[in-house]
Length: 405
Ligand SMILES: *[C@@H]1O[C@H](CO)[C@@H](O)[C@H](O)[C@H]1NC(C)=O
Ligand SMILES: *[C@@H]1O[C@H](CO)[C@@H](O)[C@H](O)[C@H]1NC(C)=O
Ligand SMILES: *[C@@H]1O[C@H](CO)[C@@H](O)[C@H](O)[C@H]1NC(C)=O
Ligand SMILES: *[C@@H]1O[C@H](CO)[C@@H](O)[C@H](O)[C@H]1NC(C)=O
Ligand SMILES: *[C@@H]1O[C@H](CO)[C@@H](O)[C@H](O)[C@H]1NC(C)=O
Ligand SMILES: *[C@@H]1O[C@H](CO)[C@@H](O)[C@H](O)[C@H]1NC(C)=O
Ligand SMILES: *[C@@H]1O[C@H](CO)[C@@H](O)[C@H](O)[C@H]1NC(C)=O
Ligand SMILES: *[C@@H]1O[C@H](CO)[C@@H](O)[C@H](O)[C@H]1NC(C)=O
Ligand SMILES: *[C@@H]1O[C@H](CO)[C@@H](O)[C@H](O)[C@H]1NC(C)=O
Image 1 (tube, protein in one colour):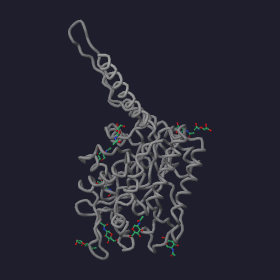
Image 2 (cartoon, helix red, strand yellow):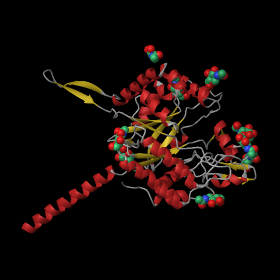
Image 3 (cartoon, helix red, strand yellow):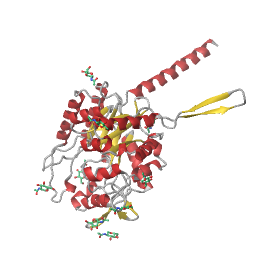
Protein backbone atom coordinates (compact mmCIF):
# COMPACT_ATOMS: atom_id res chain seq x y z
CA UNK A 1 0.00 0.00 0.00
CA UNK A 2 2.71 2.37 1.09
CA UNK A 3 4.98 1.47 -1.76
CA UNK A 4 2.22 1.82 -4.32
CA UNK A 5 1.38 5.30 -3.10
CA UNK A 6 5.06 6.22 -3.20
CA UNK A 7 5.15 4.97 -6.75
CA UNK A 8 2.09 7.07 -7.43
CA UNK A 9 3.67 10.23 -6.02
CA UNK A 10 6.95 9.52 -7.73
CA UNK A 11 5.30 9.13 -11.07
CA UNK A 12 3.29 12.26 -10.43
CA UNK A 13 6.50 14.10 -9.66
CA UNK A 14 8.16 12.70 -12.75
CA UNK A 15 5.20 13.72 -14.88
CA UNK A 16 5.27 17.21 -13.47
CA UNK A 17 8.98 17.65 -13.97
CA UNK A 18 8.76 16.38 -17.53
CA UNK A 19 5.94 18.83 -18.07
CA UNK A 20 7.96 21.58 -16.41
CA UNK A 21 11.03 20.85 -18.53
CA UNK A 22 8.97 20.88 -21.69
CA UNK A 23 7.47 24.22 -20.81
CA UNK A 24 10.80 25.77 -19.89
CA UNK A 25 12.39 24.30 -23.02
CA UNK A 26 9.73 25.82 -25.24
CA UNK A 27 10.15 29.21 -23.61
CA UNK A 28 13.87 29.08 -24.30
CA UNK A 29 13.59 27.97 -27.89
CA UNK A 30 13.74 30.81 -30.38
CA UNK A 31 11.44 30.16 -33.31
CA UNK A 32 12.87 30.45 -36.81
CA UNK A 33 10.92 31.78 -39.77
CA UNK A 34 11.88 32.10 -43.41
CA UNK A 35 10.74 34.58 -46.06
CA UNK A 36 8.76 33.46 -49.11
CA UNK A 37 8.65 35.45 -52.34
CA UNK A 38 6.09 33.70 -54.47
CA UNK A 39 6.56 34.76 -58.09
CA UNK A 40 7.15 31.43 -59.83
CA UNK A 41 3.69 30.64 -61.09
CA UNK A 42 1.46 30.28 -64.09
CA UNK A 43 -2.19 31.19 -64.40
CA UNK A 44 -4.07 29.19 -67.02
CA UNK A 45 -0.80 28.26 -68.62
CA UNK A 46 0.45 31.87 -68.75
CA UNK A 47 2.98 33.77 -66.70
CA UNK A 48 2.13 37.21 -65.36
CA UNK A 49 4.62 40.00 -65.86
CA UNK A 50 6.66 39.21 -62.73
CA UNK A 51 6.71 35.41 -63.01
CA UNK A 52 7.65 35.73 -66.68
CA UNK A 53 10.48 38.00 -65.64
CA UNK A 54 11.60 35.48 -63.00
CA UNK A 55 11.58 32.76 -65.62
CA UNK A 56 13.52 34.84 -68.16
CA UNK A 57 16.23 35.51 -65.59
CA UNK A 58 16.97 31.81 -65.40
CA UNK A 59 17.15 30.98 -69.07
CA UNK A 60 20.99 31.23 -69.25
CA UNK A 61 22.38 27.81 -68.55
CA UNK A 62 24.89 28.94 -65.90
CA UNK A 63 21.97 29.75 -63.55
CA UNK A 64 19.99 26.54 -63.97
CA UNK A 65 21.43 25.00 -60.82
CA UNK A 66 19.66 27.73 -58.81
CA UNK A 67 16.22 26.97 -60.21
CA UNK A 68 13.74 25.67 -57.62
CA UNK A 69 13.16 21.91 -57.72
CA UNK A 70 9.84 22.18 -59.56
CA UNK A 71 11.35 23.93 -62.61
CA UNK A 72 11.96 22.01 -65.82
CA UNK A 73 14.56 22.57 -68.52
CA UNK A 74 12.70 21.81 -71.75
CA UNK A 75 15.46 22.75 -74.17
CA UNK A 76 18.10 25.37 -74.63
CA UNK A 77 16.40 28.74 -74.00
CA UNK A 78 13.22 27.15 -72.77
CA UNK A 79 12.49 26.49 -69.15
CA UNK A 80 9.15 26.19 -67.45
CA UNK A 81 8.08 26.49 -63.86
CA UNK A 82 4.89 26.58 -61.86
CA UNK A 83 4.89 26.56 -58.10
CA UNK A 84 1.11 26.93 -57.99
CA UNK A 85 0.18 23.27 -57.63
CA UNK A 86 -0.85 21.40 -54.50
CA UNK A 87 1.75 18.73 -55.12
CA UNK A 88 4.62 21.23 -55.21
CA UNK A 89 3.39 23.05 -52.11
CA UNK A 90 2.91 19.81 -50.19
CA UNK A 91 6.49 18.89 -51.04
CA UNK A 92 7.76 22.33 -49.96
CA UNK A 93 6.05 22.02 -46.59
CA UNK A 94 7.79 18.69 -46.04
CA UNK A 95 11.14 20.22 -46.99
CA UNK A 96 10.64 23.24 -44.69
CA UNK A 97 9.59 20.94 -41.88
CA UNK A 98 12.67 18.79 -42.47
CA UNK A 99 14.89 21.88 -42.27
CA UNK A 100 13.30 22.66 -38.90
CA UNK A 101 11.56 25.95 -39.70
CA UNK A 102 8.71 27.09 -37.50
CA UNK A 103 7.06 29.43 -39.96
CA UNK A 104 7.01 30.91 -43.42
CA UNK A 105 6.73 34.71 -43.66
CA UNK A 106 4.70 35.32 -46.81
CA UNK A 107 5.49 38.45 -48.80
CA UNK A 108 1.98 39.81 -49.14
CA UNK A 109 1.45 41.59 -52.45
CA UNK A 110 -1.76 42.91 -54.00
CA UNK A 111 -3.49 41.26 -56.92
CA UNK A 112 -3.91 43.49 -59.97
CA UNK A 113 -6.24 43.23 -62.92
CA UNK A 114 -4.86 42.62 -66.41
CA UNK A 115 -4.31 46.36 -66.93
CA UNK A 116 -2.28 46.50 -63.70
CA UNK A 117 -4.80 48.39 -61.63
CA UNK A 118 -6.48 47.49 -58.39
CA UNK A 119 -9.64 48.67 -56.71
CA UNK A 120 -7.54 49.50 -53.64
CA UNK A 121 -5.86 52.91 -53.76
CA UNK A 122 -3.17 51.51 -51.46
CA UNK A 123 -2.36 48.75 -53.94
CA UNK A 124 -2.18 51.35 -56.69
CA UNK A 125 0.12 53.42 -54.50
CA UNK A 126 2.45 50.40 -54.34
CA UNK A 127 2.71 50.21 -58.14
CA UNK A 128 3.02 53.96 -58.40
CA UNK A 129 5.64 54.65 -55.71
CA UNK A 130 7.51 51.43 -55.00
CA UNK A 131 7.52 48.91 -57.83
CA UNK A 132 6.18 50.37 -61.12
CA UNK A 133 6.08 47.01 -62.84
CA UNK A 134 4.92 44.79 -60.01
CA UNK A 135 1.89 43.60 -61.93
CA UNK A 136 0.81 40.25 -60.52
CA UNK A 137 -2.52 38.50 -60.89
CA UNK A 138 -2.37 35.85 -58.19
CA UNK A 139 0.27 36.75 -55.59
CA UNK A 140 -1.42 34.70 -52.87
CA UNK A 141 -1.10 31.40 -54.70
CA UNK A 142 1.55 30.17 -52.28
CA UNK A 143 -0.41 31.15 -49.18
CA UNK A 144 -3.59 29.60 -50.57
CA UNK A 145 -1.88 26.35 -51.53
CA UNK A 146 -0.25 26.22 -48.11
CA UNK A 147 -3.56 26.77 -46.35
CA UNK A 148 -5.24 24.05 -48.39
CA UNK A 149 -2.45 21.52 -47.89
CA UNK A 150 -3.01 18.33 -45.96
CA UNK A 151 0.28 19.21 -44.23
CA UNK A 152 -0.72 22.73 -43.16
CA UNK A 153 -0.20 21.91 -39.48
CA UNK A 154 3.50 21.09 -40.08
CA UNK A 155 4.54 24.71 -40.34
CA UNK A 156 3.07 28.04 -39.23
CA UNK A 157 2.95 31.30 -41.16
CA UNK A 158 3.06 35.07 -40.77
CA UNK A 159 2.28 37.98 -43.03
CA UNK A 160 5.09 40.18 -44.30
CA UNK A 161 3.10 43.21 -45.39
CA UNK A 162 4.43 45.54 -48.06
CA UNK A 163 3.91 49.25 -48.62
CA UNK A 164 0.80 51.03 -47.41
CA UNK A 165 -1.69 48.19 -47.86
CA UNK A 166 -1.96 47.80 -44.10
CA UNK A 167 -3.91 51.08 -44.22
CA UNK A 168 -6.69 49.65 -46.41
CA UNK A 169 -9.62 48.65 -44.29
CA UNK A 170 -10.80 45.85 -46.65
CA UNK A 171 -7.29 44.43 -46.72
CA UNK A 172 -7.13 44.73 -42.92
CA UNK A 173 -10.18 42.46 -42.74
CA UNK A 174 -8.44 39.96 -44.98
CA UNK A 175 -5.24 40.07 -42.91
CA UNK A 176 -7.10 39.75 -39.62
CA UNK A 177 -9.00 36.68 -40.83
CA UNK A 178 -5.65 35.10 -41.71
CA UNK A 179 -4.17 36.11 -38.36
CA UNK A 180 -7.03 34.30 -36.63
CA UNK A 181 -6.04 30.97 -38.20
CA UNK A 182 -4.61 28.35 -35.85
CA UNK A 183 -1.40 28.22 -37.93
CA UNK A 184 -0.67 31.91 -37.55
CA UNK A 185 2.65 32.33 -35.75
CA UNK A 186 2.43 34.14 -32.45
CA UNK A 187 5.02 35.42 -29.97
CA UNK A 188 5.00 36.46 -26.31
CA UNK A 189 2.11 34.26 -25.28
CA UNK A 190 -0.21 34.49 -28.22
CA UNK A 191 0.44 37.83 -29.94
CA UNK A 192 0.21 37.48 -33.75
CA UNK A 193 3.55 38.36 -35.36
CA UNK A 194 3.33 40.83 -38.29
CA UNK A 195 6.20 42.19 -40.37
CA UNK A 196 6.00 45.41 -42.39
CA UNK A 197 8.44 46.31 -45.17
CA UNK A 198 8.66 49.12 -47.74
CA UNK A 199 6.80 51.65 -45.61
CA UNK A 200 8.61 55.00 -45.63
CA UNK A 201 7.75 58.71 -45.87
CA UNK A 202 5.65 58.42 -49.02
CA UNK A 203 3.60 55.57 -47.60
CA UNK A 204 3.15 57.41 -44.29
CA UNK A 205 1.89 60.42 -46.18
CA UNK A 206 -0.45 58.35 -48.34
CA UNK A 207 -1.71 56.32 -45.41
CA UNK A 208 -2.42 58.90 -42.74
CA UNK A 209 -1.27 62.26 -44.09
CA UNK A 210 1.92 61.96 -42.02
CA UNK A 211 3.57 59.59 -39.53
CA UNK A 212 1.26 60.65 -36.69
CA UNK A 213 -1.79 60.03 -38.83
CA UNK A 214 -0.38 56.66 -39.89
CA UNK A 215 0.14 55.66 -36.28
CA UNK A 216 -3.55 56.29 -35.73
CA UNK A 217 -4.34 53.99 -38.65
CA UNK A 218 -2.03 51.31 -37.19
CA UNK A 219 -3.65 51.76 -33.78
CA UNK A 220 -7.01 51.28 -35.47
CA UNK A 221 -5.72 48.05 -37.00
CA UNK A 222 -4.59 46.83 -33.59
CA UNK A 223 -7.98 47.69 -32.17
CA UNK A 224 -9.75 45.76 -34.90
CA UNK A 225 -7.57 42.77 -34.08
CA UNK A 226 -8.26 42.82 -30.37
CA UNK A 227 -11.95 43.61 -30.76
CA UNK A 228 -12.52 41.19 -33.58
CA UNK A 229 -15.82 39.42 -33.29
CA UNK A 230 -16.52 40.50 -29.74
CA UNK A 231 -20.23 40.63 -29.30
CA UNK A 232 -22.70 39.91 -26.60
CA UNK A 233 -26.28 38.90 -26.56
CA UNK A 234 -28.94 38.63 -23.95
CA UNK A 235 -30.84 35.42 -23.62
CA UNK A 236 -34.27 36.08 -22.16
CA UNK A 237 -34.62 32.76 -20.45
CA UNK A 238 -38.04 33.39 -19.01
CA UNK A 239 -39.89 36.40 -17.72
CA UNK A 240 -37.81 36.78 -14.56
CA UNK A 241 -34.23 35.95 -15.56
CA UNK A 242 -32.09 36.89 -18.50
CA UNK A 243 -28.52 35.88 -19.17
CA UNK A 244 -25.80 37.91 -20.76
CA UNK A 245 -23.44 36.08 -23.12
CA UNK A 246 -20.16 37.54 -24.25
CA UNK A 247 -18.56 35.91 -27.28
CA UNK A 248 -14.90 36.75 -27.66
CA UNK A 249 -12.96 35.84 -30.78
CA UNK A 250 -10.56 38.74 -30.45
CA UNK A 251 -6.87 38.35 -31.16
CA UNK A 252 -4.15 39.50 -28.85
CA UNK A 253 -2.50 42.80 -29.67
CA UNK A 254 -0.30 42.04 -32.72
CA UNK A 255 3.47 42.16 -32.29
CA UNK A 256 4.48 44.42 -35.15
CA UNK A 257 7.96 44.54 -36.60
CA UNK A 258 9.13 47.37 -38.86
CA UNK A 259 11.75 46.36 -41.44
CA UNK A 260 14.54 48.45 -42.87
CA UNK A 261 18.21 47.69 -43.30
CA UNK A 262 18.91 51.27 -42.21
CA UNK A 263 18.83 50.89 -38.42
CA UNK A 264 18.35 54.58 -37.64
CA UNK A 265 15.47 54.80 -40.07
CA UNK A 266 13.93 51.58 -38.77
CA UNK A 267 14.11 52.88 -35.22
CA UNK A 268 12.65 56.26 -36.06
CA UNK A 269 9.85 55.01 -38.30
CA UNK A 270 9.05 51.97 -36.16
CA UNK A 271 8.70 54.24 -33.17
CA UNK A 272 6.58 56.73 -35.11
CA UNK A 273 4.12 53.95 -35.96
CA UNK A 274 4.10 52.56 -32.43
CA UNK A 275 5.61 49.27 -33.59
CA UNK A 276 7.05 46.74 -31.14
CA UNK A 277 10.39 45.93 -32.76
CA UNK A 278 12.58 46.42 -35.80
CA UNK A 279 14.23 44.01 -38.19
CA UNK A 280 15.41 43.92 -41.78
CA UNK A 281 14.45 42.08 -44.94
CA UNK A 282 17.78 40.35 -44.73
CA UNK A 283 21.16 42.00 -44.36
CA UNK A 284 21.67 42.30 -48.06
CA UNK A 285 23.96 43.73 -50.71
CA UNK A 286 27.73 43.56 -50.69
CA UNK A 287 30.07 41.00 -52.21
CA UNK A 288 32.57 41.25 -55.05
CA UNK A 289 32.36 40.63 -58.81
CA UNK A 290 34.58 37.56 -58.34
CA UNK A 291 32.41 36.16 -55.54
CA UNK A 292 33.28 37.00 -51.94
CA UNK A 293 33.74 34.15 -49.46
CA UNK A 294 30.67 33.30 -47.42
CA UNK A 295 32.54 34.27 -44.25
CA UNK A 296 32.23 37.89 -45.46
CA UNK A 297 28.46 37.50 -45.60
CA UNK A 298 28.45 36.18 -42.04
CA UNK A 299 30.60 39.08 -40.91
CA UNK A 300 28.29 41.60 -42.63
CA UNK A 301 25.29 40.07 -40.83
CA UNK A 302 27.04 39.93 -37.46
CA UNK A 303 28.06 43.57 -37.70
CA UNK A 304 24.44 44.49 -38.35
CA UNK A 305 23.25 42.32 -35.46
CA UNK A 306 25.66 43.94 -33.03
CA UNK A 307 24.66 47.40 -34.16
CA UNK A 308 20.95 46.69 -33.89
CA UNK A 309 21.22 45.01 -30.50
CA UNK A 310 23.00 48.12 -29.23
CA UNK A 311 20.56 50.52 -30.90
CA UNK A 312 18.14 50.65 -27.99
CA UNK A 313 15.31 49.19 -30.08
CA UNK A 314 13.69 45.80 -29.64
CA UNK A 315 14.69 43.54 -32.52
CA UNK A 316 14.06 40.40 -34.52
CA UNK A 317 17.43 39.14 -35.75
CA UNK A 318 17.47 38.64 -39.55
CA UNK A 319 19.81 36.15 -41.20
CA UNK A 320 20.68 36.32 -44.91
CA UNK A 321 21.88 33.09 -46.43
CA UNK A 322 23.24 34.80 -49.53
CA UNK A 323 23.28 37.58 -52.08
CA UNK A 324 23.84 36.94 -55.78
CA UNK A 325 21.71 38.93 -58.21
CA UNK A 326 23.67 37.98 -61.33
CA UNK A 327 20.64 36.34 -63.01
CA UNK A 328 18.90 39.72 -62.87
CA UNK A 329 21.63 41.49 -64.83
CA UNK A 330 22.01 41.52 -68.59
CA UNK A 331 25.77 41.05 -68.56
CA UNK A 332 25.97 38.54 -65.70
CA UNK A 333 28.20 40.84 -63.66
CA UNK A 334 27.21 41.92 -60.17
CA UNK A 335 28.84 41.76 -56.76
CA UNK A 336 27.97 38.50 -55.01
CA UNK A 337 28.91 35.99 -52.34
CA UNK A 338 29.76 32.33 -52.73
CA UNK A 339 27.30 29.83 -51.29
CA UNK A 340 27.81 28.54 -47.74
CA UNK A 341 28.98 25.02 -47.07
CA UNK A 342 26.72 22.97 -44.80
CA UNK A 343 28.98 23.68 -41.85
CA UNK A 344 29.10 27.40 -42.56
CA UNK A 345 25.31 27.53 -42.76
CA UNK A 346 24.92 25.59 -39.52
CA UNK A 347 27.38 27.73 -37.62
CA UNK A 348 25.78 30.92 -39.00
CA UNK A 349 22.38 29.73 -37.77
CA UNK A 350 23.83 28.93 -34.36
CA UNK A 351 25.22 32.48 -34.11
CA UNK A 352 21.82 33.99 -34.88
CA UNK A 353 20.22 31.83 -32.20
CA UNK A 354 22.99 32.66 -29.76
CA UNK A 355 22.68 36.43 -30.08
CA UNK A 356 18.91 36.05 -29.77
CA UNK A 357 19.30 33.99 -26.60
CA UNK A 358 21.86 36.29 -25.04
CA UNK A 359 19.93 39.52 -25.50
CA UNK A 360 16.46 38.58 -24.46
CA UNK A 361 15.58 42.06 -23.27
CA UNK A 362 15.84 43.27 -26.87
CA UNK A 363 14.97 40.05 -28.71
CA UNK A 364 11.85 39.58 -26.60
CA UNK A 365 9.84 38.01 -29.43
CA UNK A 366 12.42 35.21 -29.36
CA UNK A 367 12.40 34.64 -33.10
CA UNK A 368 14.87 34.77 -35.99
CA UNK A 369 13.84 35.55 -39.58
CA UNK A 370 15.81 33.99 -42.42
CA UNK A 371 16.19 35.45 -45.91
CA UNK A 372 15.13 33.45 -47.83
CA UNK A 373 13.16 30.40 -48.91
CA UNK A 374 12.49 31.12 -52.60
CA UNK A 375 14.13 34.45 -53.43
CA UNK A 376 16.05 32.40 -55.99
CA UNK A 377 17.03 35.30 -58.24
CA UNK A 378 18.45 37.57 -55.52
CA UNK A 379 19.85 35.05 -53.12
CA UNK A 380 22.45 32.58 -54.41
CA UNK A 381 21.66 30.29 -51.49
CA UNK A 382 17.87 30.35 -51.36
CA UNK A 383 16.96 27.41 -49.17
CA UNK A 384 14.26 25.79 -51.26
CA UNK A 385 15.67 22.62 -52.82
CA UNK A 386 17.04 23.41 -56.27
CA UNK A 387 17.93 21.63 -59.49
CA UNK A 388 21.66 21.86 -58.85
CA UNK A 389 21.97 21.72 -55.09
CA UNK A 390 19.05 19.44 -54.28
CA UNK A 391 18.25 19.31 -50.57
CA UNK A 392 21.77 20.30 -49.51
CA UNK A 393 20.70 23.38 -47.52
CA UNK A 394 17.57 21.94 -45.89
CA UNK A 395 19.57 18.88 -44.87
CA UNK A 396 22.24 21.08 -43.34
CA UNK A 397 19.67 23.01 -41.32
CA UNK A 398 17.87 19.86 -40.21
CA UNK A 399 21.01 18.99 -38.24
CA UNK A 400 20.89 22.31 -36.36
CA UNK A 401 17.20 23.17 -35.96
CA UNK A 402 15.30 23.31 -33.74
CA UNK A 403 17.81 24.85 -31.39
CA UNK A 404 17.36 25.67 -27.73
CA UNK A 405 19.04 28.46 -25.82
C1 LIG B 1 7.67 36.68 -71.46
O1 LIG B 1 8.96 37.12 -71.83
C2 LIG B 1 9.28 36.86 -73.15
C3 LIG B 1 10.74 37.23 -73.36
O2 LIG B 1 10.95 38.56 -73.04
C4 LIG B 1 8.36 37.62 -74.06
O3 LIG B 1 8.64 37.33 -75.42
C5 LIG B 1 6.91 37.22 -73.75
O4 LIG B 1 6.02 38.00 -74.49
C6 LIG B 1 6.62 37.39 -72.28
N1 LIG B 1 5.34 36.82 -71.97
C7 LIG B 1 4.48 37.42 -71.16
C8 LIG B 1 3.20 36.67 -70.91
O5 LIG B 1 4.69 38.50 -70.65
C1 LIG C 1 8.84 25.91 -74.61
O1 LIG C 1 8.36 24.58 -74.63
C2 LIG C 1 6.95 24.50 -74.53
C3 LIG C 1 6.58 23.02 -74.40
O2 LIG C 1 7.19 22.28 -75.38
C4 LIG C 1 6.31 25.16 -75.73
O3 LIG C 1 4.91 25.09 -75.60
C5 LIG C 1 6.75 26.61 -75.78
O4 LIG C 1 6.26 27.22 -76.94
C6 LIG C 1 8.26 26.71 -75.77
N1 LIG C 1 8.64 28.11 -75.61
C7 LIG C 1 9.65 28.63 -76.24
C8 LIG C 1 9.92 30.07 -75.95
O5 LIG C 1 10.34 28.00 -77.01
C1 LIG D 1 -8.65 48.47 -65.78
O1 LIG D 1 -9.56 47.38 -65.63
C2 LIG D 1 -10.65 47.66 -64.76
C3 LIG D 1 -11.49 46.39 -64.66
O2 LIG D 1 -10.73 45.25 -64.75
C4 LIG D 1 -11.46 48.82 -65.28
O3 LIG D 1 -12.48 49.13 -64.37
C5 LIG D 1 -10.57 50.04 -65.45
O4 LIG D 1 -11.27 51.09 -66.07
C6 LIG D 1 -9.37 49.70 -66.32
N1 LIG D 1 -8.45 50.83 -66.29
C7 LIG D 1 -7.84 51.26 -67.37
C8 LIG D 1 -6.90 52.43 -67.19
O5 LIG D 1 -7.99 50.73 -68.46
C1 LIG E 1 -11.68 44.66 -54.69
O1 LIG E 1 -11.65 43.51 -55.46
C2 LIG E 1 -11.67 42.32 -54.74
C3 LIG E 1 -11.53 41.16 -55.69
O2 LIG E 1 -11.03 41.56 -56.90
C4 LIG E 1 -12.95 42.23 -53.95
O3 LIG E 1 -12.93 41.06 -53.17
C5 LIG E 1 -13.06 43.44 -53.04
O4 LIG E 1 -14.28 43.42 -52.38
C6 LIG E 1 -12.95 44.70 -53.84
N1 LIG E 1 -12.87 45.84 -52.94
C7 LIG E 1 -13.55 46.95 -53.17
C8 LIG E 1 -13.33 48.04 -52.18
O5 LIG E 1 -14.29 47.09 -54.12
C1 LIG F 1 1.92 27.18 -34.58
O1 LIG F 1 1.54 28.16 -33.65
C2 LIG F 1 0.69 27.68 -32.65
C3 LIG F 1 0.20 28.87 -31.83
O2 LIG F 1 1.10 29.92 -31.83
C4 LIG F 1 1.42 26.65 -31.81
O3 LIG F 1 0.58 26.15 -30.83
C5 LIG F 1 1.86 25.53 -32.74
O4 LIG F 1 2.64 24.62 -32.02
C6 LIG F 1 2.67 26.06 -33.90
N1 LIG F 1 2.90 24.99 -34.85
C7 LIG F 1 4.09 24.76 -35.39
C8 LIG F 1 4.15 23.69 -36.40
O5 LIG F 1 5.07 25.39 -35.07
C1 LIG G 1 -0.82 64.90 -39.40
O1 LIG G 1 -2.02 64.53 -40.07
C2 LIG G 1 -3.17 64.70 -39.29
C3 LIG G 1 -4.35 64.19 -40.10
O2 LIG G 1 -4.19 62.87 -40.47
C4 LIG G 1 -3.34 66.15 -38.91
O3 LIG G 1 -4.46 66.27 -38.05
C5 LIG G 1 -2.09 66.65 -38.20
O4 LIG G 1 -2.19 68.03 -37.99
C6 LIG G 1 -0.85 66.37 -39.02
N1 LIG G 1 0.32 66.68 -38.23
C7 LIG G 1 1.33 67.35 -38.72
C8 LIG G 1 2.46 67.58 -37.78
O5 LIG G 1 1.34 67.75 -39.85
C1 LIG H 1 19.07 45.56 -22.64
O1 LIG H 1 19.95 45.29 -21.58
C2 LIG H 1 21.21 45.94 -21.71
C3 LIG H 1 22.14 45.42 -20.63
O2 LIG H 1 21.46 45.23 -19.44
C4 LIG H 1 20.97 47.45 -21.60
O3 LIG H 1 22.19 48.14 -21.76
C5 LIG H 1 20.02 47.87 -22.72
O4 LIG H 1 19.68 49.24 -22.59
C6 LIG H 1 18.74 47.05 -22.68
N1 LIG H 1 18.00 47.38 -23.91
C7 LIG H 1 16.69 47.57 -23.93
C8 LIG H 1 16.10 47.94 -25.27
O5 LIG H 1 15.98 47.45 -22.97
C1 LIG I 1 26.85 45.00 -66.03
O1 LIG I 1 25.54 45.58 -65.93
C2 LIG I 1 25.33 46.32 -64.75
C3 LIG I 1 23.88 46.78 -64.79
O2 LIG I 1 23.00 45.70 -64.90
C4 LIG I 1 26.29 47.46 -64.69
O3 LIG I 1 26.09 48.15 -63.47
C5 LIG I 1 27.70 46.95 -64.75
O4 LIG I 1 28.59 48.02 -64.81
C6 LIG I 1 27.91 46.06 -65.96
N1 LIG I 1 29.22 45.45 -65.85
C7 LIG I 1 29.99 45.19 -66.90
C8 LIG I 1 31.30 44.54 -66.62
O5 LIG I 1 29.63 45.45 -68.03
C1 LIG J 1 25.49 23.98 -55.99
O1 LIG J 1 25.55 23.57 -57.33
C2 LIG J 1 26.53 24.24 -58.11
C3 LIG J 1 26.37 23.79 -59.55
O2 LIG J 1 26.45 22.43 -59.63
C4 LIG J 1 27.90 23.92 -57.56
O3 LIG J 1 28.88 24.64 -58.28
C5 LIG J 1 27.96 24.35 -56.12
O4 LIG J 1 29.18 23.98 -55.53
C6 LIG J 1 26.82 23.71 -55.32
N1 LIG J 1 26.78 24.29 -53.99
C7 LIG J 1 26.96 23.59 -52.88
C8 LIG J 1 26.90 24.34 -51.60
O5 LIG J 1 27.16 22.38 -52.89
